[in-house]
Length: 432
Image 1 (spheres, rainbow, N blue to C red):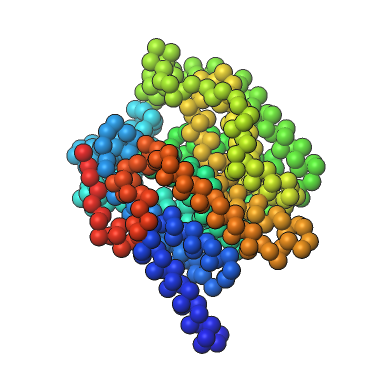
Image 2 (cartoon, rainbow, N blue to C red):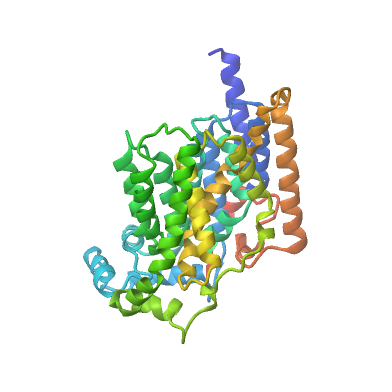
């Protein structure tokens, strides 16, 4: 490589570093994405690390007060540290003998392990957990980029700007977001001819981080048994006929088995706590209400991009993409029917939703199918991300942040100069 190219590579990556050091990560990820459209000299490892550090610090530096999910997780962490009852063996016994609701094995292993390392320091807990969330999202962006065929930095942009599920759920629903991201890693790396055992470690681990994800363990094994038997499957009419039949069978089985599952949950001592909170008619929470079907909710940017991507790539879809589309259809149907387990299906639906955000930016490459437009790809994608980021930040400024995000950076989430330097200097989470 010529010395001039080495200097250029170093210079362009130093510019990105300075951008993240000085500017708010929302602005930094937009500018970095714009740069990545016109040069391939950006190092994704550097960008990924800066992305993780920036968003982790800005999310961790907030006001923790109750009642809220994130406040409950902090209290859960403190409870593990203040009790001799929580040991690795006792955690397993509690899950299999006492109750499974909010007693997920791997989540409590994480709390115990981190607590032993940090002497149950709450600052370290929140920073480590947000770092884990954003690290997993950065890893996934790289994995779904298909070895660089799609721009992984553009995928990071999608995670932040196209749809807010990562930010919303990543803010306070820690177990389900971590479990969902780990499950997606397993699904993406799964190859029935090479990595089927290694990938299953991730897939099965997710169920022990949040029990709502256990449904995927069964669903994936059925999918692998009947459809995903080899890596390079031909996505012809026969393949999609099997997919449609499996979707129909899943919906039918879940509806038929619902009374049996409800009775089992009501009677089992392992699920008594979950039943009383979510399923008991006398104490039923609003969170378990069924979702009313409204076709207009599907007329948003993310769904339009996913439909475009699927239409143009029907025969080239990845098997994990097909699986998540199947899961999404089944879970949407189950949420809109008269189903007592809607809270479980709502939690589980986060998995395909996150994947849709990750792959939504792939729709921007579909214009390559039209002759003469591919050479303008960088220009029209730049116009697209400029428009989307401007609208998103404008809405944030006009309507204000939702309650999930208003405490982030202690209310300064939208400050333009809240870069890494400012985050490090002013890092001081408040625990009430």
